[in-house]
Image 1 (cartoon, rainbow over the protein chains, first blue to last red):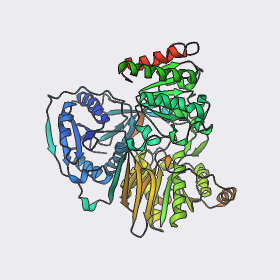
Image 2 (tube, rainbow over the protein chains, first blue to last red):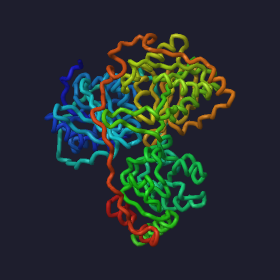
Image 3 (cartoon, chains in turn yellow, orange):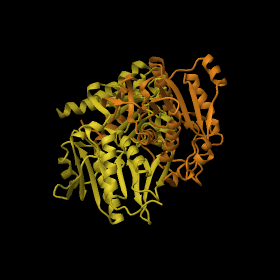
Image 4 (spheres, rainbow over the protein chains, first blue to last red):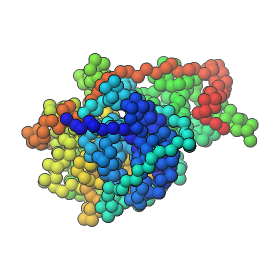
Length: 339
Length: 270
């Protein structure tokens, strides 16, 4: 039987070059509600090199306490120093809940931390709650998102979950809030770390293709209904006008309408833009698995029975080859009016 | 030196059904396939074998029927396969899964020094992406997730140089071996095995390990060794989509309505 005498809700603040990932602040909002239900305290964990300025921001977003680990060893994210330091911190202060963002970094870190602590971890949650026994209820989509599963970790602490970006509401920032900063040391020295980061390149420098897609706020997706390589340009024009990126389905790759680099789906790239406009996309289950967490999904497809309509917020029943150019010219018209 | 590839047999996503009464996957009648992400890990291991002369072993924890999936790995060019199957291992979550796989890797390491463990970035059924990090942590290997390029391996200096594709940036990393690497699909295009390789694979030996071989404490494996469990399962209901304008007779009007709606809801601005 595990030691259940753990108290407090912790949120890991993921940062890069001193800027926090949005999901970390969203988690402080969600964490505050959990802490209230549990009658306990909300704390943030800030790890970095010269990252102290994030403490004030964490208070503003609702943390009552910040555990700050500030050391040159944390200049870049690397699994070993980060996970060993969190494990040391958890073993010292014993929080009952530990939340991280379900991002590339968050998933890398959470798996190592949970394994080292021999505790349960639920990946990619979209909803968190507390049951009447004070257990954390972690709900996540399962099997391509058709089914939701609520997971519990009754006998292991801390109860760990990663949460998808934009699944929780961003809390209101209140700069007048203050809290307590607790400084703790790194658990490992540079000499003992076997991993070195040689170079970091922002994908914004990389132009289009796969990496641009994971960051894009607006994605225009090419489906089989786009019909030809020549029509691809119509969607590229819309993406350019809206400041977005073009993606495609597996079917569009097979029909040689779009290149493989743009493929979104279960075995392709997973994306979560603010707006996903699916053009001539039927919505095969494997495609939906790669994009259903988008903020707003728009279906442009004359087949109202197509599965894409089951996940979309808005739809236009029509030929995307007529609708898309009309959208492009309207966006351009609005831009001209503005300037 | 040895490369170990961890693969999983998963239900074909086109035929997924769950029993709503207990939340368990209905396996009956659902065809199983190699997890598509793992095909990229297998391909990369065979490429590394061709370039650096590593030996490659593929391991799979699953039902006895997963032997078919391991034969596919043989056909792609791996040298040895091990099926890890025991009723005691069923119902395992991430923690219990990484334990069994790590112990199997340790057993392989008794015969040959391990250079790398390769995994797909996640499975299509569980989709946690956490088993790889679990293995790295248990074995104290360098953990390199989301790798889209293995640039160089230096077995004598025990170094590997990879590129990771993280949340909007690329990282070039040098790490000491042994390393646990999870690969993204962009890393390569998995080969279609030649008929000759397929025939060889069909006749090849599949090693089977159960708990009489791994000798793990029954409390630490399968459902008993899993801290998490499913409390409730339900289907996701989506609200009906809102149809804007008349796209057939007035595509232009519908296009304008959509852009106006996105602007009004703060999803887009000019």
